[in-house]
Length: 569
Image (tube, rainbow, N blue to C red):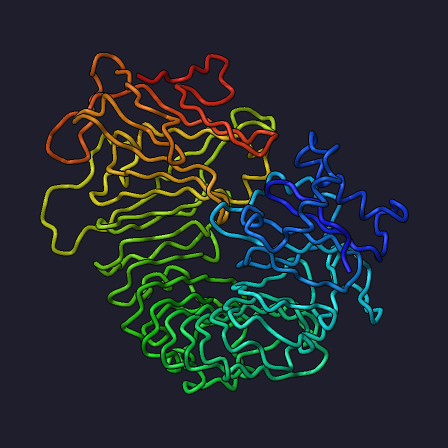
């Protein structure tokens, strides 16, 4: 079935003898692609290809395969056979594009986990002649997909739509995680699954999804991509073992007996919270993520067990006065984290916080204009915010952006705290002097990132000298761009260790005093210890063309001609 393999230290590529030629390379097109793949990884071994073929053909099932981390099967038909090598734990089905070969070298597999990656050519239709539903989407007839009997733990698809999923004859007995794109699931899935993620594409008639037999399933995510028929919760039958559920709509037929009794995590994407829904939610729920268009009253989330609340407000034409909504904003008595996305800039954040709350995430505020005001509890430990306040260095739309910390923040004191004022009048950003604040995260929003956001500057001396923060993170979405740790080495912060991305890229720096201590500021310890006013310190960040990043500690932002690097001790 397969031609002889080509192998490098980390990659093994097979070619088929019978294939469709998708890129016009002629009768040996796919063979040439595999040869180029080998040469891409190891140019100087080109003359030894034939010798490698003979050696590896006889040793595919020997211990030498332990160093093979990625198995790449280039196949030009929908007949795909996954051949396990060295007991791979993950299988990835991926669409083959002309850029895939160039990306392989940059996306090296983890040295501690083996991956089996199957790359399929881009085709325009499945075997039945169905049209591709989405640009770049490959439709694969699952009846031509052979899953081997091997100790696989995870199978997931990437840019594939699997049809006739029920015709997969045998699943690996050790399979615990499955992520698929398909039209419907008519036949049983492996009972060994603990995690299932299904994305449904267009369905022309209602159908039921009975998963009650998956007695080991603990996590389920169901997404529907088309509105012609949207699978809702009432079309699902869930196993009692489920503890985590993510779904679009719940549907009108859902009742309190529909939820598994041990459910801890619930993500409802397209259903608004209501008193009737609140009365149905399982009593042990600890995390809820949902939409809301009314004041968040106790009747909406009555569970006293809730530890994490993620609420988004959307303007659908029926919302009430936002100030009233926030005054009535209810948070459960033992909640530990709160994520809030307001519907417009007139919203103010909640004003009443339980003393158990330690983490607040306001990064969902994606408008470029700052929201009117924040309220933060005095006992906060971790705070995430959006890059609402930013400015370019000049009028050039591609200019470097200077990011700044929010200033419109009100501090809600501890109800029983009679100590002296917690912030100093000389503190530029009073919220930094929160006694327990240890982690600060800036999330770049799309509105400002569109400017050539591969470069930005942010001033960090305020964080170093006016706060107890030990960790500062800059991220875009779920991707961390920059993370640095602060280690203050003396009471006046004259020497500070900056650890950037878990390395000593920043090193130990000595801060420079301005004007011989004329403008001292009070210590965040509130013990009358005066800290000198130090020279500004910026982190200048720039994405490089080779997918790496350039991070520098400087006394000025990026575009300043007098930009000077801060020297380490």
